[in-house]
Image (cartoon, rainbow, N blue to C red; front, side, top):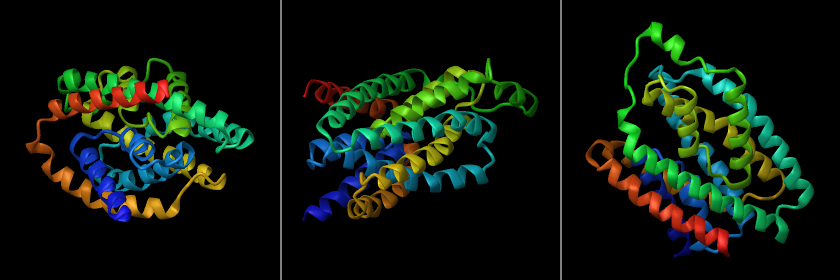
Length: 263
């Protein structure tokens, strides 16, 4: 019965990701900690690989549609991947299962969830106002950041946050890209964010696996549910009230964030 609950949780999170584009980490990690009682370091490490595998398929389809701006992905990853490796090294030295590390992880996770809730609410209200198409000439200008170091810097912040909490590569990453590339169409921003999340969560997840913070059996159960969930969600996306769902999720994530901070 417990096995079915994990599969169903994976399906539910996959369905929401398919419907809204919200990163699975902001939903799956608090669900594993609060509902299933999984220790924070195992929940975060397992969820990172869960996110990597679930977003690989999306990246392949987006790349085939030729809407992934690999220059943006590369610049952001140049900051996020080294920051992830540095964070993993600190976790290895501190001991991922120690009470002090758990305290840092849960508090940082709470803050990340609150930031994600704000980012989701922002997207729910303003997301549809972004341009959807752009000419080839304007695209070259739109993919140029105000300064070359900004994507690397913000990427480093996201890399550290994602490695510590498994949250941040989704909604927060989209908001960062919207600020850095305001003229870029929203579909391309989302595509770049999803493509960037794959190497980041894969590196962070494998790093957590190396220090013993991944439950492989749990990961298999979650993926067994999430893959059909994402498939269904992407087919229902045009018939669901996107803004209503995002607003409701932002309230739930804010509640989970506050709860994590005060425990």
